[in-house]
Image (cartoon, rainbow, N blue to C red):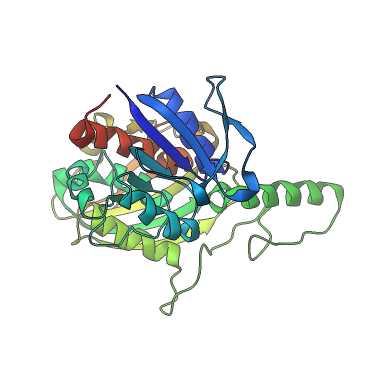
Length: 341
């Protein structure tokens, strides 16, 4: 027996990816509903590559009673309206927005990192999915933290335009084409030209000079992994369509060599170590697209601090950073609590 699953925001980048991954991983499903706003009502989208076409339903009047799991990829606004409604109807919400991440009664889950935290979902019947840049980071940090205890992390992210949704991807495409044909560049989604450029600004600025994206990485890492970890981030938007990259410097309480760290990462769940000290012996964003793994490369010792390591981390942000992690949470929920499939 399978589950009755609703995908909210099914017509967006992440929602479509959720449908694809549910199909790819053969998630046990008895019924699937594709939900979106009234603008998309009646359109059809494919359920992964199964050939099955789903007619999009209006989330505003959808009754969640009798549905087991709702994967939300609709943004904080619609989620604020519909997630409590779904949860009250007995449907477990797995939310990809930032709305519930720091709610103390809502578990924030990366299954490879803190699976036991899911047991607290019954307080609100809601589970939060972390920020895309946080998700891949904590997957890489977890096994190293278990071995040598992380004190401090300095991370610079290089985040693709798909993190800003379809509008971000369209803007990169249109600007690139415009530059080639000599047209002007008119930033709309981003604050400055994104084509052939980088922008050290993601989300709104806070009073301390950091952006909200940078703040999210700090507080989410503490909630998921360890509140004692000190972390500072610089988040940069880059002209890449899909795939987030991170340059990570880590300071540990205990000694950990680069060789031992490589051995640990090589055997850790969710990680693919590609680390050859030669031309091309590392992974770039275009190579991770469509893959489930968090790729780690360029593991080396940091000579400027005691017990320091540096590494390069790359992942498909629409997958591990969003849709895949949500489906993995659903799988974990099924194994530990719902027990149907």
